[in-house]
Length: 384
Image 1 (tube, helix red, strand yellow):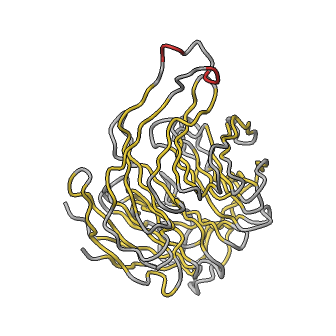
Image 2 (cartoon, one colour):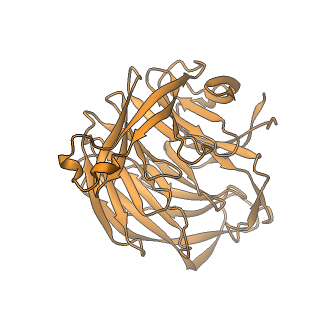
Image 3 (cartoon, helix red, strand yellow):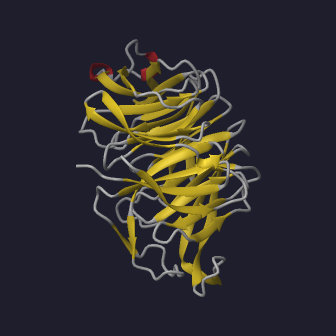
């Protein structure tokens, strides 16, 4: 199945660490080693905002807060090697027009963003940050071996630390929330994945996944599962991509009147390896992404290879596309699936980053970022 590059954004002179498309808007956030986060329109791939001046070191991860209820604010969290997490809110009333750097005669609209909060407490580099599905909680993880869970107020300006989770024995590389449940997963340099849940006002480790033989760099939940089901994909320095499924969960409702700290049977989950995907990579695999539309998985890593997998039946996966040197000779740090947006803006202008319509659900793109500082956009032919 063919894969083709449809666009490339020469985004930064330094490496791209992480990319995050907004869940409902045609916006893309990029975390970079130049201490800034850049926001791009997925309609035209022009920049619409640059968030800088508040972090003292590289921004390693970015995460959009899901919109919920009547709250229409656009909120981004940034995790930095300076040990802090930043919270940014777009100011929809402040807007400037500047001449674009593309050489076109049109202009590029630049949004104004406000830095509203700095979450501090980690003792070392913050490697990843992720919002829960309802946008009420934020998780961060660090080189200090801990995972922190924060609760946000309605204005996104006051954050309370609900828990500091310290079960990992090494650097925690990645955190990811389940798309429907209050379930958090974390991946670590200690070769394990841990699952976390709130249990009687305490956050507890509800499960541990052991199987990788080296650092687990990235994890992502299956977004197509039915209610009560959970599947997870992980990638590792052991050059494998693995899929795990939850086989059972014990809620222990009979002992809810006893604090979880004193119970002999705390909430627990049993996870099993469902598949090892066909091996293609010849080096550490840094990122995996599980599409919520097609159900495909994409992986990238140190070897510069972009691989796309498809499940032909439960637990059986095949490679349907791969691209060598997807960022020339450079390592690829991140890959994410996104819906494909159809622009309604005229070429050379980006007067409104949100003008545009999503194409049919099956039409999607893969967005990758690497050490070359480029953001590449890829299409895979859809097959019904």
